[in-house]
Length: 567
Image 1 (cartoon, helix red, strand yellow):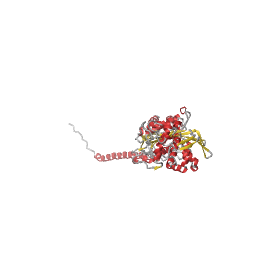
Image 2 (cartoon, helix red, strand yellow):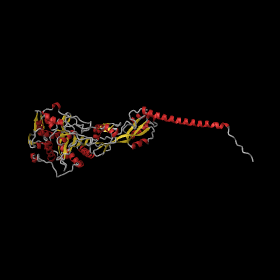
Image 3 (cartoon, rainbow, N blue to C red):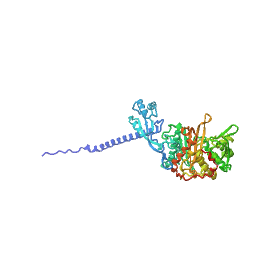
């Protein structure tokens, strides 16, 4: 049996183990340092790009400087404005791999808001960053991504969305790409909407989306039917001053700011000032009642077929009396001649004082920045101007001025500012100040109900809602002169007139006559029916139940109307 040889360990092997382990550790350490260095390099590069990259012409995608905004809702919690995450499409021209001429043509087909030449200029600019589209829809993102250009970048950023599209657009306004309020309540409430601690709490407006939609649709239909160039409307709670609907047409879409702005951006309800004609006559009568001039609606005035004034001017009526007429008849038939004589008795000083107390001499009191400046006779406010202002000629105010004035006249005589914020905790009804006596406010109800039941406002009536109000047809100035060919027609009313709750004002700018109106373009034919339809649609929504059995006490006016003279 042969012996097995066993090799003894070498003396050097035991000594070599620590060196081998040390070498492994060194290599691991070197690998870790390399990884750490690469990581730091990447972090440094990202920080450098964040701080120093040229992003001319655009904000950063996902810009943290665009603050989230709180929602805006209507008085019932319906969302009118909210913030969502939207897609943005950008490109790095300095990393472009595609042919810029070919890519520009494809981008122009997908995003026609810019021409192919404009896209070509962006692609050949050599910049490190440029936006191609903001607020892009997912379908567009998918189509651009399908082009396969790696230099295109997609990201998400906050976008202000108006889910009701153009509803109450002039109230809401819109925001810039940088998330700042540009107009409307978005601008007024900018700091509140972006306050960090309150972003989760929506701001409630006084607007009722249902009433707003009805007012907008009826005015739009009338504007189209009578080929008017514009329209405006207001519905206001006379007790609180809350504006539950306010519209201006043509309509604006705040989801597409900048498009159609020249035509639609102008707010006719609060910024536009107009001579609103005979809708001023109730104020003149109320002033005379408060001053003790008119003691009865049966008080008589001489109403000739024409009234010469100042030796140079003549006041006429659409429906001349040619006889003595009562105050009730003056209002019923909308007599300029009768109202002018009442205004002359009130006098310039008292007339101006009343109008000043009603806020008519200043921009309308509302939260919006878009407010028009009243136009008055100024230094020429003499006897003739006093008479013409008495029937709404020679003074230009906004439709919201008019609504606030009717609220003052029929809420017991207290002027309060209009508000677009819902009254409640944190926003109370202001005390206001007295303009008319409660007695005058009460007695005027029957007079304006008469206009709707028996006078020029018949087509404004809505069964069961006891609407009272006044028509107004005012000539426009064209080429420096008044012309009957172009008019502004208005109806200002209150319902229900036996217990006033809401004011409604509707206005059409330059409506045209139609076969249905027998060639007339006056307010009783074109804008009064708008009021009837709106009230019929929204009355019950506002808590006013129609009641055909109820009526305003007309005993103060009917005995003084020559009913045989009616149509």
